[in-house]
Length: 290
Length: 260
Image 1 (cartoon, each protein chain N blue to C red):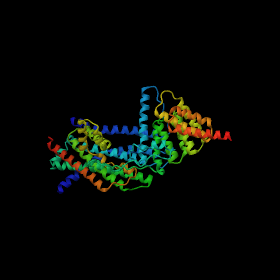
Image 2: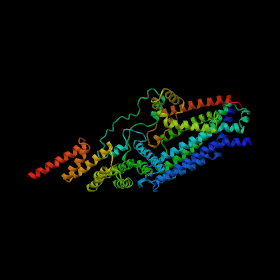
Image 3: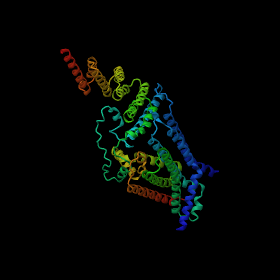
Image 4: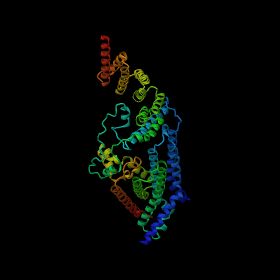
């Protein structure tokens, strides 16, 4: 009798481990199915503590999924100072940032044999995924937005991949519109959509509408503005000023300059808008004189 | 010598039979299918052709399942023998304690390796069908190093099984393996910011814990990085051999000291 009972004791722990593992994996499977299915989870954090925790957890999970897309962009290497986010934000600036920064593959190990092995086993060189293979990034971006629709950065990066890397601007536009529907307060998404219409689609009128909305949303926001908010508003003013300049609309350029100067008169955006304003005013003056 | 070989063969056979009798493999295979099937049909944004994420998930499952199976097999061997009292007729055969340790170790390793071969065969089939890539040098290296990892885990689990209960042993081995897999490369970096006691602890862990991260070629395989030099692979396998031998010596010492 004792022997039987003790045998059960011996067999049970691994069985419990297997049961726990089964439960965990089934949970992961369900989550995976939800992520890749079209069913929508409730996205807004409610007032209850549980809803708030759930919303935060989903945001953390979503950010981790998005981090994977950045890792994939760098061939599975985690690179901290050159990310997809940087590319997504700079995509109309022709990738001007320095790509030659140091990612030396095999740095000094300080005589540590374990580090020596690790450096040779795990790839550390700096490389970017080619545009042809950019489809590999999509599952993670898609999963990130499904995990939390409030992950605005995931929408921005996804739009960048779709429009700039995969040359599918229409899909990018639909994706951003979906993001705006789920994040109606987001200035970033309106700005991204405006930039997409401005730079890729060359549709100035639609771009102007979205920049205008971005400006309204940024001005409508109450409370203190941090550096990021200021940069966003300056960026919006810059694009609106640029469109107004191309239409020779002096009054609009002046208006956007005033808004930009109120935020930061010495910023490159304010100075550029002022340059356009002076240019238009001198042209107008010249034509009046003639 | 012939007798010893026959004894070891017999011990290996019983370990293999034990694994397949328990049907653990069937369970993990079904779990793997449940996880991978929905992923294989996923077409985010309506685009097909994304393979890296699928390969990564498949390899992750192979790693997870192989580690769990190996730990379970290694940790169960001796407690089960003691409880069933099958160790007494074995030692009375006469099978020396050293041969018993070696035989049981090779048996557990063969059982785990056989499961690994099945997993990799399934992986090759998946990659071949989805991408048309059936073989690469990195895949061979990943398999060889994975075998090295299983050798280390088996030896560690076996030594632990003579010291701890099955559940404690499984927990500690799994914790060690996964902790080193995640933090192994960063331990010196983490130690630098600690107090003296923390530094000593972390450096001791760095020196003594099994460096499971050495055996992880998933990143190279999945992201199609060039293969590692075979010289480095040999060094890693030598590390596995030294670590496993040390664990087996400890196991032998523990078994010799154990009152039967």
